[in-house]
Amino acid sequence: MTSNNQVQSTIRRVLDDKRGMPGALLPILHDIQDELGHVPPEAVADIAEALNLSRAEVHGVISYYHHFRTEAPKGAVVQVCRAEACQSCGSEALWEHASKQAKGQNVTLESVYCLGLCATAPSMSINDKPYARVSHARFDHLLAQLKEAA
Image 1 (spheres, rainbow, N blue to C red):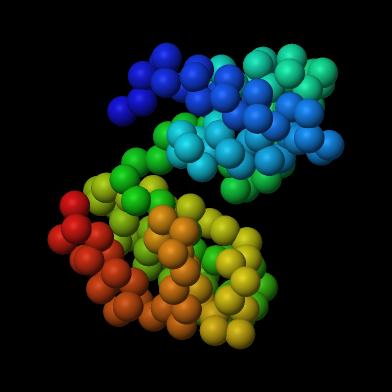
Image 2 (cartoon, rainbow, N blue to C red):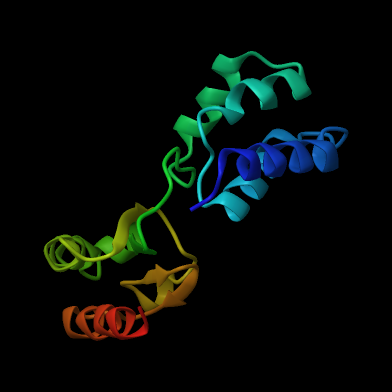
């Protein structure tokens, strides 16, 4: 668990590193999420002040992109691609299967709208590691591996 001081320290460090960069908002949000696992709501005011933006503008970007989380993920982050190419190869059925299998597990299941594996759909990622041609059986196998590793 990350303490409030660690969160504030991370936010300050990222802002100090990136605030002078043109178009710094998205790189800042990515860096904070990469380090903390999410963009905490308390970061919005600091980011807005550092970039001379309104809190509404920063919040709008965070809420617009599905990639950004405002709460810390629970366990491993499992993302199932639900974009068109994956849908045409069964990702909606995979999503329903994954939703049932992930209940009660130490994972955060998220939709994602393209992992760049369209030619090998359906795809998913676990903690940013991509997996292609994921069947229900393969999903179950990967989930079992996560349990064993925990």
